[in-house]
Length: 208
Image (cartoon, rainbow, N blue to C red; front, side):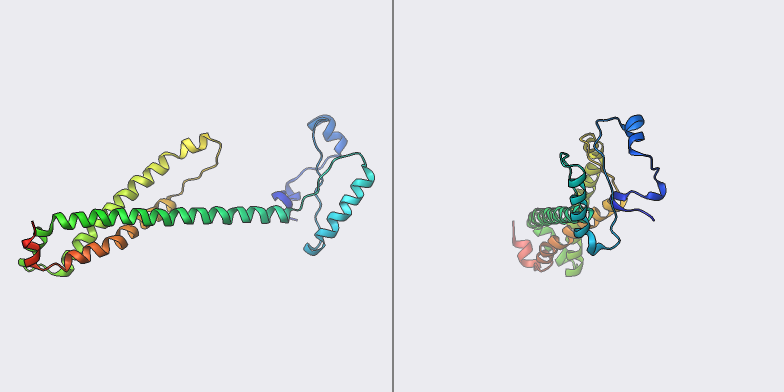
């Protein structure tokens, strides 16, 4: 039959009488569970109603609950979507805050090296070469931050596991983090690098 509700596979299961399991395996404190599989998905609500009626008739004084695996799956899917949205929001926030930080650093770097840019311009350095120089610097700053952040994330995995959470670090996740860092530096470093490349030799050399 393959796996059914809750991932249980009848092909790999052993079935014994309930009274035998209660006496030799679980004891009398266990709460019995019954798994039912409907032949059609559309019949699930009707089958749940029928099961409740039969249980109420056979065990009028018992407390029991009937759950639908489909509803549990929908709840889990909804929770996963909510978590994905939260992670995406955090990534966007990190992208903006980190990018603005890199941009400010690059503006300061361009300001402090204005005369150096003027000398390079006077010696015939092209705008493209100056743009690539500062753009590479911005990318290297962001990549360095990505390396430190990724290393810290992998180092914290054992501590997170101590809290009881299941964490499985993946190499591909580190690669995505590095690409994200490099992309952030490249995008937010473009404008300061462009501003540096547009300086004229006279105005660059004239600044103190």
